[in-house]
Length: 288
Image (tube, rainbow, N blue to C red):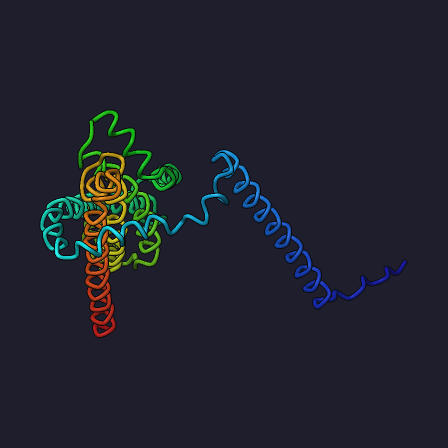
């Protein structure tokens, strides 16, 4: 008994069916996203006593009050800069120390969570989930808990930002590690080097420029984060800004000075880190 051959496969029809299915799933996902956004906004507005639409016309009132207080007192701005410069230095110190601590922790976590490099391969999912947790919890939540335990000051802010930095940089560093050449590691292991020595001598020299570039970028972010945490009592220039704003009209010129100090600081460090990263990229290309 002869069997009838199957109908020839139609690649074009199969491709069109897959594209239609993908568009359908994409449309459903987009609709759900819009629905969640709208419902979330309506819920937030309701929890806020429906004050969003009523307060929208007043959104420029605060900037107008700041300008009205500042323009007649422009001559006092240099003095305010000098007054609040130590608080700015404290904010930069918080960002620098937290970036350093977070980067060191991130290097260890990234090496322990990279396939082919991990000391304990079975624990890779554990270290990855741990970094996910560090990234998922906002710095302000950790800072509030630490302030409750340790009291106000720069230490809770530094620890909170360092923990978040470890999770964020650990993810980026692990992706960089996956592109590292394993031959130096295998060579070091063959002559009896320990895992730590193999990582330090065989992997870190390859990826250190990328580590440094990501750490600089994170330092910029941490300056902003340390200023924000000052609003919850973590010290630095954010704490001074909160106090200046709390006094209301009459001291808004001090708030304007702090705004300018913070803005100029972020611009300076952004330009500096961009220059360093470009120099590193150029030297790397020149080396090749």
